Structures are given as structure tokens and as C-alpha cells.
Image 1 (cartoon, rainbow, N blue to C red):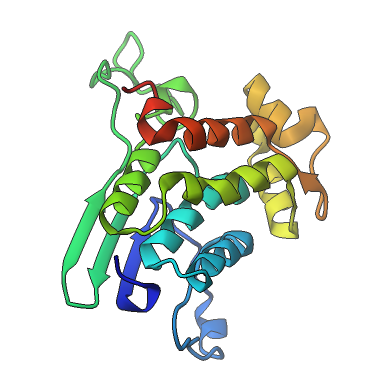
Image 2: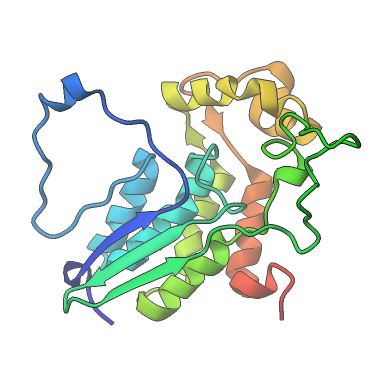
Length: 232
């Protein structure tokens, strides 16, 4: 296995971050590091990834830990129910690409988002049960670790399980983001309960715990990435 300094990687988890304002970007200098760097949409996830590098893990190890942690700290995008891509370039010039985007269910049909008259049902492809694909994140991250990593899949999940169980303090952006999705989240009892506290919206600085998500990570740690999804 190769160490962190020997890996260069670009990882995309199927979501886009907001582009930086050109005027402000011009005033910022590129950030450089001597040995390694981790960047994500969540400071907490990035810190966990950096800790992985400092403890001797390689870049793929760090990417896996960040991916799992984002499922807790960035629920609007980084999650277990989605998928993504991973592009890896090793120090010897070899390139590898993993595609673990979510797939349509086996019983999906071309007309599943149409009404009886053949018209598109607004929102049916983006909100609700029919909008859900077969997720690929867990299998994709597990495969990346198997081929290129130095840590186990269980170890990659442990920081996420701990953050979900103990909770973390919401930033102003994170609290505002949960409230910003209220129109969609309040349509379903469980999402309204978990993310909106039934209308008692989370505020900046409050502790956000997700015990059910922690249990999911516990199953992944105990049973592995495949058996926990019903595969043997």
C-alpha cells in the first residue's frame, strides 16, 4: 500500500458546490501544502480527513473517511443514499476511475413520472419515493478502499458514527440550510421530525444528533458494506 504523499486524487460525490464570486476570488491566493490537503463542503469532514492523513493513511483513505463523514455533517448532499465518482492518479502515473452513481430501480419504467394522460407529474422525479435510486456510495467507497486504501471500511465509518451519535454544533450556514429545505422536508413525517424538529427549527450553535443514522453506521461497521445492505 502507498502512503499519502504518493497519492494525488480528485473525488466527486455527485453534488456541486457553489461557485466562488469572481470578484472575491481575485483577492485570494492559492493554498499550498507540503505533504497533503483535504477539501470538502464541511470543515468537520475535512478535519477528519486530515487526521486520517496525519495518522499514516493515504489519500484514498482520507477520501473515504470524508465521504462517510459528509453523510452526517452535510446531509443536503453527502449521504449514504446517493452515489458518486472517484478519479485516482497514483505517483507512478496510473489512473483509475470508479463510477458508483446511483442507478434506477429494476422496476423503474419510462412512464413512471407521468399521469394517466401522459403528462409529467411535477416534482415526482425529484421528491418522494419515486425519486430514490439504488444507492452506490457505500459499495463505491468500499471498493476504493479495497483496491487502493490502507484502512478498513469499518475504520472509515467510525468517525461518522461517532459524530452522528454524539452530535455536532451547527454553523449558521448548516442551520440555515436545514430551514431552507423546509418546504420539501415538511412533506414527510420522518424528515420533518429529524431535520425540522416538527417546526422547531434548529438554530446556529445547537447540537444536532442523528441517533438513527448512527445505528446505520454501526450496522455497516459490524456487518460490512454488503451484508448490511441485504447482500450475502
